[in-house]
Structure formats: C-alpha cells, structure tokens
Length: 211
Image 1 (spheres, rainbow, N blue to C red):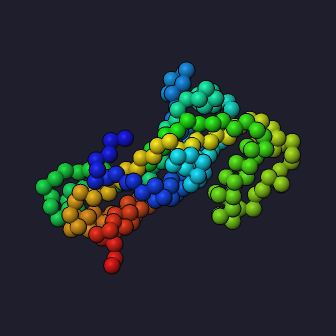
Image 2: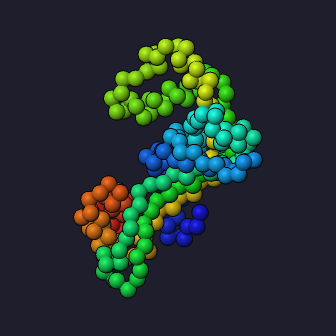
C-alpha cells in the first residue's frame, strides 16, 4: 500500500483496535483460478502471530477455500471511514480536492481449521463478539443438533497469524491546524456517519486534541 510518511500509522495496539472496529474486512488470495476475494467478519487477537492473529470462517463451497487449503498467502484489507475533502474548506485554498480515508492491510499465511469442535468454538466466539453485545439471545443450544452439525460440515475456520501489518490514516496530517479545523467543521456540518467519523479521527490528532 502506498503510504507517504505523514499518513503512516505504526502504533500496532491502535491498529488492532481499529481492525476490531472495522472488522468486516476483505480477504484476498491468488490461487490456481486467479484472484479471489471474500468479505468476512474477523476476530482480532493480540497473540498468535508476530503481530497478532486473525480468525474467521467461510463456506467450503467458496473457491477461495481451495486457495487457503493450498497455503496461498493472504491479504486482508480493513477499510475505515472515508470522505471527499473540498479545498474550499481550507484556510489555504491554493491546493486541490482530495479524499481522506483509513485502511489497514494485513498479510499472513492462512491455516485452515477443519476440526468440528474448533469450528464450533470459532462460531461461538463470533456470536459472542457480534450478537451478544446487541442484546441477542440466540445460542447454538437453541438449534437442533443435526441442523448445527450440517452447518459445521459446510464451513471451515481460518486462522491467519499476522506476518505484516500496514496502517494508512490519510487525515490531512500534512495540512495546517487552520486547514484541518476547517475540514472538521465542514464534515460535521454534513452530518452523515462517514463524515462524522472522519472528523472525529482528525480531532484525535495530538495538535488538535483538547489540552
């Protein structure tokens, strides 16, 4: 990923926290049939690889399953908030339009998990991570055993020890305080979720954060 120094984020605990927040990511592999990409929810752990561990699951009928079984290296792309930035929002308008965006690229060699009990554990943790905090009352115990067994046979779990992690937070860091304050005001005035999220990230920059 092309990342000018001003936009590079190297704080790995912060990157993992944002990966959890932006955890529906894109798994990319290249195998015998060419490029494959699948959009999946990921669990993010601090340990399990040089830079942490990703865990997910996918259908065995997915062509990408065969790439993973063959040991194809993987790229996982986490996409955070983004927004168009107009030069009319800057104090210094002698510049051009741009796009602010946030992304984290993770690379590693996947390990396919075939054990039924291990797959069940991954699914149970996934439910606990995504459904339970919403007040969901669904559990595997409420589903007939034979129905669960057929579902488990249809999927595989995937573990990706993180070998490399790259973070890009393109948030006007190369602009003056006045320019960035103008961007924040304009984004907040737009009021949509993406614009508000980008504005909030810019506000977190050390020279803009409240003393």
